[in-house]
Image 1 (cartoon, rainbow, N blue to C red):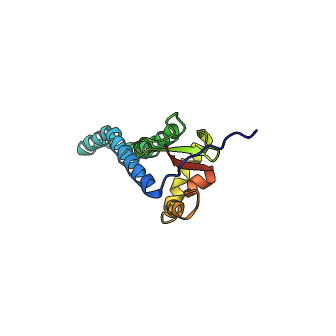
Image 2 (spheres, rainbow, N blue to C red; image 1 turned 30 degrees about the vertical axis):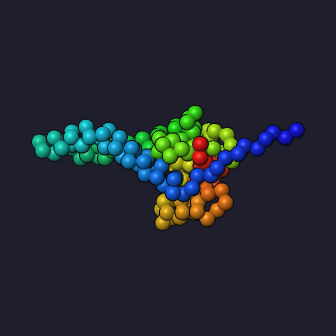
Length: 151
């Protein structure tokens, strides 16, 4: 006897875009708050002429780390959690599953996150392609073998 195939409704590109905008706003907002102490310290050092070239380089590196590390942790951990969704996706009633309908693990979550960058660099085609395939998968979904579905 075969197990029943899970049923789900695929998320449309519009709903996914709104979820992404919510997540972007939250990530940027939290990132700005996290980077504010660094920016204030840099401003004080510049104003007092006590700035070393190494300190400026270290501050830039910390800023870049926060702006990449935080979204990476945000998306990968939330999408493989019991929620199966970032806050934006959750607010939009969406979740991420693998092609068998199961919760994704760290491998698929990381592939999804890191492949969003080349998808965006290809004039956004890595995202737009979801409108032109039956499974409504973006580039990162196709490679990771994941789907974004309605809850």
